Image 1 (spheres, rainbow, N blue to C red):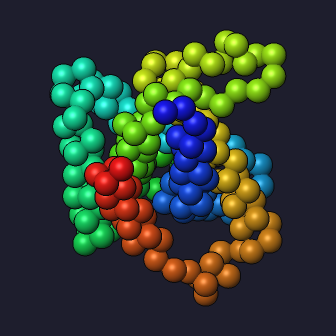
Image 2 (tube, rainbow, N blue to C red):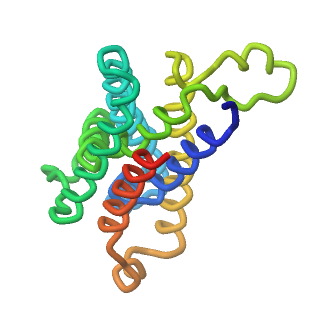
Length: 215
C-alpha cells in the first residue's frame, strides 16, 4: 500500500501538538511577557521544538529497536496496548513535570520540552502511524521526485524525514498560537475561556492506541 496518508497524519499530529499549551507555546508566551518582548517568544520556540523532536526521536528509536527484536505481528498490539494504557494513566493522573522557575536558557528549554513531550507521550502518539504506514513512501512532486521516492517510514531517512515534518508542523502552529496569544488575545482571555486540554490529550492517546489495534 502506498499513499500519502501517514505523512499527512504525521503533519496533522504535529499541528495538534503545536496547539497544546503543554508542548511549549504557553511557556514561550510567559517568557515573552516576562521580558516584555515578542522576540523572546520566538527565541523560545526553536529550543522547545528541538526538545520535542528529541522526545519523538527517542520513541521512534525504541520502536525501531522493537521491530528488530519483536515479531512483526505482535508489535502493533504492544504499541496499541501501551498507548491505551498510557492514555488511561494520563486521564486519571493529569500531572505535569515541575520546573524550577522562569529563568531559563536555550538548553534549559530543550530539556524542559523533552521532559514535557516524553511525560505526555507525544512520541508514543505517533507510533501507530509508523507501524501501519511503514511501506508508504513520502509524497513527491517535481524534478526531485526520483530521489525522494526511496524515502519510506521503515528506513532511517524515512524516520528522520517524518520527525522533521512532524516537528516543523508543530513549530509552525506553536509560533502562530504563541504570537496570536501574546499580541492579540492575552492570557486574561485564556483564563476566561480555558478548557481542559489534558483530558483531550489523554483521549487522543487512547484513540490512537485503539486505531492502532483495529487497523
